[in-house]
Length: 206
Image (cartoon, rainbow, N blue to C red; front, side):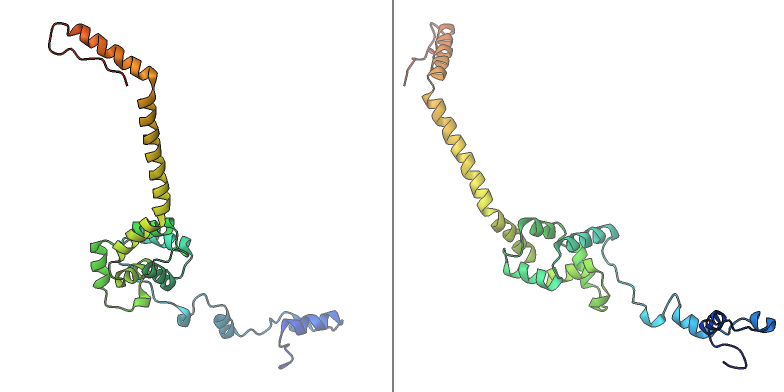
């Protein structure tokens, strides 16, 4: 206690619970509060904790959609670039590769990135992603080849099914007796119309 004034509200409540009686002048006197300490503890902004604003070079909507795509990949950027460089199909599927291709930087965007002279850490997530892609030689061609590689077995299977369907159709046409009769009827009808001319054709059966 300093000069008869309690140092805290806890002290005051504690003595009230014990039945301690205080004078009326004491009761109306508010407890002393260190406002400077409160301002430090509950300050809304701390100058030391403020981070520099990210530099955005790419169109806002495109950068926003690119960052959504990267968040869905759930792969740290350095690891992602290693997978792309190595064409690692154990960590990447065709959807991931095609999404990266969808957001591959244009020539204009590359020029914007090249023209930036500041710190890399100050760039936005999309800009950093573009910057990493630009470090890989022929990255767009590699990603396109990677996508084709991941789809090759599926595409080959689909192609074989289509070829088999065509071969089956050809065989059914060649062996169809009903179709041969229809063609013979058409030829006979045509010959009847062309009777007396050199356009009459001979009917042949297989």
